[in-house]
Image (cartoon, rainbow, N blue to C red; front, side, top):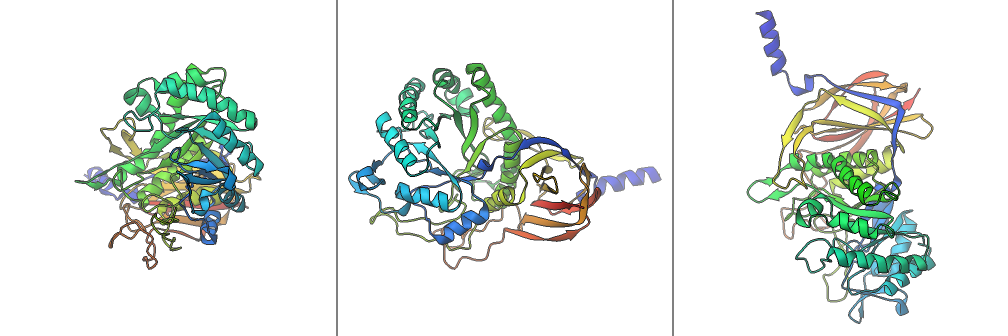
Length: 493
């Protein structure tokens, strides 16, 4: 009878009391954390003043993709010093000037990568832009040929044969202008390759392999459904797809370009959770949990560059607001200096707080939840761990950083932590991203227009907080808050 009662009590015990364990082997390096993982898209109609620059530095943005996903509808006026123009009218936005974009990157100590205009353009025009960038000190950069030309029915769709031909014409001209640059192709990924335009990626890699140095894959996950609202579990599950996607991309590269497969870099020039309300929901705490785990998975599986979509926009930017593009466009809506989307905090943890050397970590006993979706090539299908962990160390081995993602909606999780190859002092620093719930966000949604940068916006409810903690040891336990990302920063004795 006692045994039966004990079993019943154990089954009824709260999740926080069940046994979870995290092990870290600080001596076993598994990857380097590329500094180019902390990029963001920058377009001509975004702000670039001192307040924005301070935000970029504090967040640890290391890379810009410019001009965001724009690859048509403008021309460069080099006679006016290098300014974007529509028709015969130069744009007035500050970032419409190449000099300003390069100055912004230089000022915040970020690199700048370029989306090459391919529609209504020529190899000569692209080469001129490459030469102008080099003249301004941005030589040897990465240039991707277009943006998402793989959606059939879209006005910017480029058939596979035409895209191979385009790569073969543009790449040599651009590299003649600056032999140090890297040229990349747009890769549709599993949804395009296996369903929407079967075999497209394989065909292009096979036909253009001699000209390409990297591939650009775009990664969004999670959707919003009007009759159900935001499903945070689906959003958080997205990070599980990184390993799958990278594996499928590498398979294509090894099959179609075996002599270059290990040299062609895998980049994510756009990634996010659900970027827009109409497509997947606003930027919630769930997106931050997805991002924190996804960045760790990218580093672990060899992604060389990741550029979050995007810096500034009313729905999906790291912050809201924009710059006026020309006198007849929407007036400038300044960032209020207060509203920061949760995903920015996840990037900041990786860029500013985690170390450069990823070491082995493992989680056991935390349990899982199930998720499925009709869009099998975009959203994760299957079991998702409630607890994920990534560990890094400093170059000198004196610092160890442990990031833990708790996907539980309501329950704190206590985990036993065992450290191998590292003896910490008891004093640690703890940084936590948390908020009232997984669908909490920092945007204005109780007045029109929603998601905009109101000067009197309320204080954020999803916050990144830090503080001291005592209790680190070779073996210790820690309570990870429900729906949170936590980083424990430890120093050797």
